[in-house]
Length: 155
Image 1 (cartoon, rainbow, N blue to C red):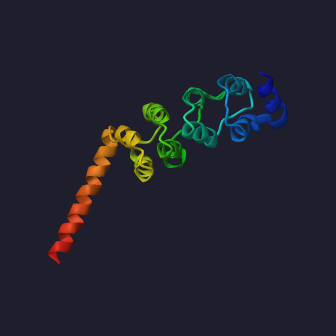
Image 2 (cartoon, helix red, strand yellow):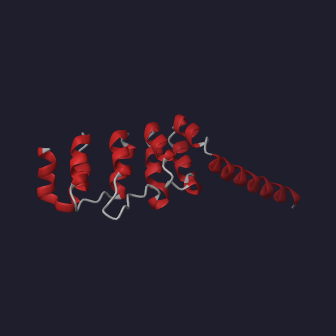
Image 3 (spheres, one colour):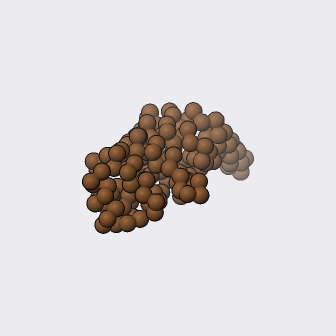
């Protein structure tokens, strides 16, 4: 509680952002306290940092947060960057949580898959490939490549 109040006194509405940026040993309790402050609004980078470090309980808390108008953080902002960063770092539990969130755009998961491939995150790749929309996209890309290849053979 004391740490949350110190951050709030020193940073006002940016307290949560500063707390997340300046620490790596985050406390769910501190985050919950900061989220109760009326002018605190989590931003997408907060979500991204927490997801890529695998802080699943804090991630869940940030995803369920709503402002006074009932709006929350949209994890699909910036082409699902939060999912992409969690995938890159192999944070399978963060990936699973994000995939369950209906706000995560099914059509934009290809970047997360590509990043998981680049970083050899096999478990994340397998989880992402369970998504039928992503599988449809891959199949479509494969058909397009096969079509182009056959056109090249024709010439």
